[in-house]
Image 1 (cartoon, rainbow, N blue to C red):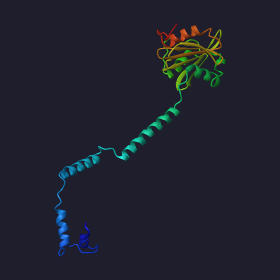
Image 2 (image 1 turned 135 degrees about the vertical axis):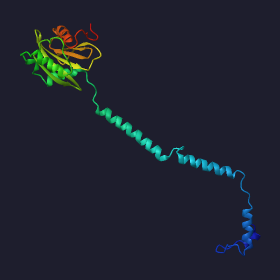
Image 3 (image 1 turned 60 degrees about the vertical axis):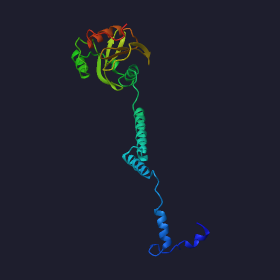
Image 4 (image 1 turned 90 degrees about the vertical axis):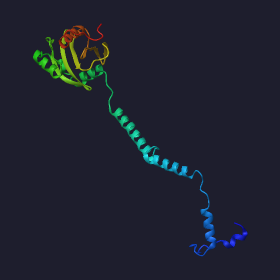
Amino acid sequence: MSFDDRDKVLPFRASHDGGDDPVFEARLRRTLAVAAPADLEERILLRQTTAARREAGVAPRPWMAWRAAAVLALSVATAGLFIVATPPVQALPELAIDHTLHHEPGATARTARVSPSQVRALFARGGVLLDAQPPVVHYINLCDLGRDLSVHFVSRQPGGPVTLYYVPGRVESMRMDFRQGGFSGRSVPLARGSLLLLADSDADFDRLESLWQQAIEPGGSARGDR
């Protein structure tokens, strides 16, 4: 605006109805005469398309990203709790020795024979049907070894009492002899479970292993048999 046009400026409170104000009408005509940009229509269409895509969910919304992060964090936390709460699987020899020493320490002192029918009945309760005549047993019971159910039995032999466990459904990876916790031991994986023997001496292990293998799985052979 030039210095000479300053007297044409309308006062702030002046009426702008334009009915009797030639200056206002002139300004209005100049404003309406301004040409619109050539790409105005394209700009409007682009703006509308972008807004529509955002509303349709093409562009990620902040609250959706926050929810996804929260779900991921909850999943990780839940998995961590599960891992902490689930105890590791212990080896059968460790479980058998602990059970023999602390849960049924008097089992090896039994001298009366258990009848074959009782032996069959206890094995049947553990899900195992004995086809062959079971060897002599002086004690038998169903016991938990960690997460697994086992048939726990004792057989008195010339070299002393031998404690045995048969764990149906759990087949160990290899056959092994061991010395642990003051016991001589043997772990024998069979086709449908594992047989464990514990005693002061392993002098009677071979014979008992063969007898019980034939009683539990007739015609079968131990995995990894020597």
